[in-house]
Amino acid sequence: MTQYVGILEGGGDVWSIRIPDVAGCHGGGDSPDQALADAISALREVAQRYAMRGVPLKHARSIQEVAGDPDSEFNVATEVAVMVPLLLDKARSVTANISIDAGLLESIDAEAKRRGLTRSAFLASAARDKIMSAG
Image 1 (cartoon, rainbow, N blue to C red):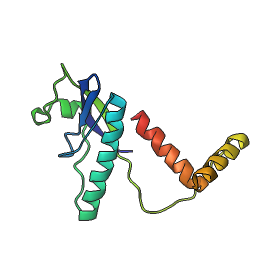
Image 2 (spheres, rainbow, N blue to C red; image 1 turned 90 degrees about the vertical axis):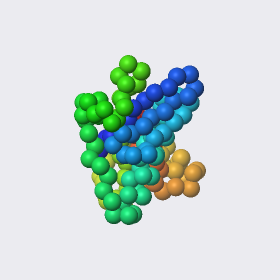
Image 3 (cartoon, rainbow, N blue to C red; image 1 turned 120 degrees about the vertical axis):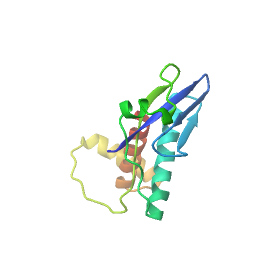
Image 4 (cartoon, helix red, strand yellow; image 1 turned 180 degrees about the vertical axis):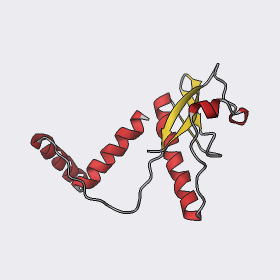
């Protein structure tokens, strides 16, 4: 999975993350975790817009490369580098064979039905949520 360096700054209930390798891409929130989730969503949206126009995203650099680039304006004294995963749909489904506890599968199916989702849609949504919260 491709990950871009995000630069986290803020305090209290105002946090932001900017992604130097993707111009204009940033996220924000009441906490660092919320800012990261917003940055992940923003990166996904920007990447989809680029793809629709046939424009490739800039190559994701390492933390060292971003920190060493004066154009990134990364202040190591007041800011923190975080990794922002790029979650892109491929517009095609694949079949995956997984093993899971029977009781857990019953709970998944019941919750998916309650929400009006298929098992696959529920599991994909849960996986996206987990990846986005982990950063």
